[in-house]
Image 1 (spheres, helix red, strand yellow):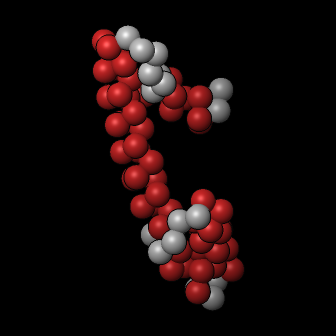
Image 2: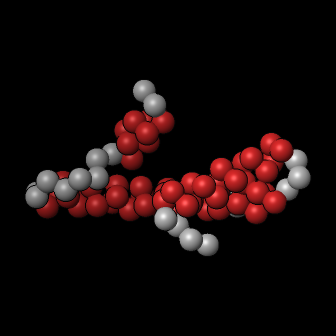
Length: 76
C-alpha cells in the first residue's frame, strides 16, 4: 500500500454516486482532501526559495519543488 492509497483510505471516498446521504459524506471527504492538498502545497512552496542556495542538497530540494509547481502549472 502506497501513501496515496493510505490517504484515500483515511479520508474516504470523494466521488459522488447520486444518493444524497452518501454524496453529502463524500463531499465532506472532498473538503478534507482539498484542505490536505492546500497544506501540502504550502509545504512544497516553502522550499522553492532554497533553489538559490549554494549547498547542493538544499539547492536540489528547492529546484525540485520549483519543478513540481512548473509541472502542475502553478505560478508564484
